[in-house]
Length: 114
Image (cartoon, rainbow, N blue to C red):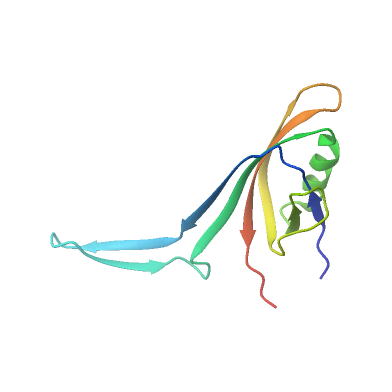
């Protein structure tokens, strides 16, 4: 399957998050606790990225067209990717002028099964 690439060149206001997807149940007052992973993905990895862009309309069109489908993310303007697939379910665009904007989004890494 072929995946699209979203080329971004961040002005580097970004943060990395990883969340362990764990369900826990505590038994009695002694603190005995049962922990188990939720689903087949034990952790979720994501990037909160904020980028100054001049092509905000193209980025918006790209993400709307995917409708939550996975894509590769390039943080050097399209030259390379990290080889991981991402989805973006929410983004915002704060216009700074006729073509310039601040693009903010949360990209979640997904697992690929070959």
